[in-house]
Image 1 (cartoon, rainbow, N blue to C red):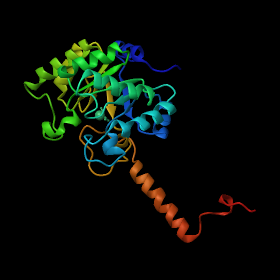
Image 2: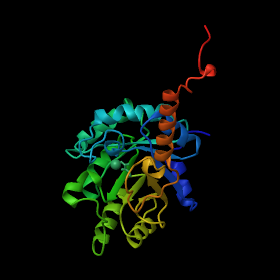
Image 3: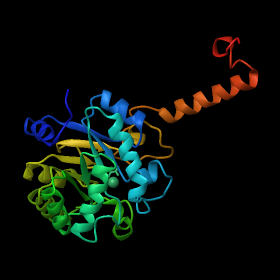
Image 4: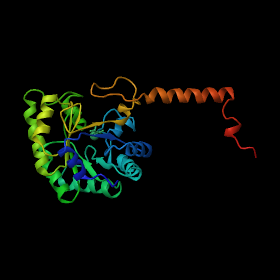
Length: 266
Ligand code: KIV
Ligand code: NA
């Protein structure tokens, strides 16, 4: 199978085939999800919360993400790898956005970029698309603006649905190949998916959209504590890893590890 590209995703959506996207930040995750047939891997700025231990995505820089993008693109044979543009690396001007996206395409060898924001981001999206860079939009709850939005909150409730629709239409018109909508009620998400031709990817946006995305550590149960309502845990990796670490330490203490089979005779 060849590399997944924009037309493959559009074709799946045109056929009414729903598809799944996951984040990935390193080689093994990329390799495993790629082999599992996940068509799109996002090196999200959620690396802030899931790799670097920050409380938000705001402190994440281009230098934090470029090496992760490079690792994921090196390991994924088929998946399209999308690099998130971090806070402050694209909002100043279309020229800034192009310079940042160019770093991700060249140094990270990304296949596409993603940025947050609706209608105000149209000039940035247009310049990137004109330069030949596929752009994924991201509207609804946008974590980079969480200090303005007042924390993790459902967006586009009531009359907010009109703004969501306006932003979605503006991004499609500007040339985005797909749009993520985060934490919006099902009817607003469905209306956007119905109105747009390009794939609408939901996270906390219900089932009536074209695709879904989750942070892989949430999906696999690696994250501790209470996960958001929109997460489903398909594995319990945290408990499994903790158990493995405890058994290893126990066997080191008891002398059961390393055994003869783990040792060199001479
Ligand atoms: O950074 C990220 O992981 C994201 C997805 C959750 C859409 O932006
Ligand atoms: Na993100």
